[in-house]
Length: 128
Figure 1 (tube, rainbow, N blue to C red):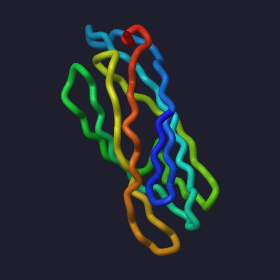
Figure 2: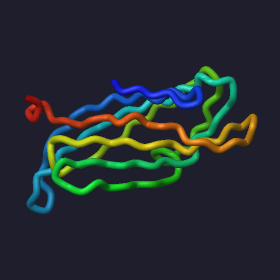
Figure 3: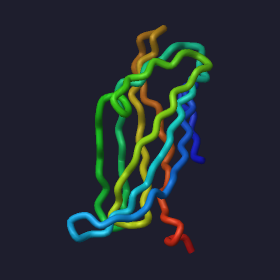
């Protein structure tokens, strides 16, 4: 598990290898990840956007920006958490992701970024 805390917001990531498949005559490697965002601060916050840098051993880095996470913009009260799962397709059996969430503090109206720790993907057969 990969974990990072920024301004009282703890982000934990667990990854899984989902399998391989052919698409457009190329092998693809499917990975899943589950992220838990835990509010350890004293203020209610809302996740409004995300930014991802996706690293694939056989391709150039890809950047993805978007609103919320999996169609939601969760409001997380102090002591509560939000968990969601998503996935990533890579051209190689090894890669990684990192990024940040854009958040709003409901008490101060401050907007801030919460770092998502770099987490690695590796198919079991690719590990030496």
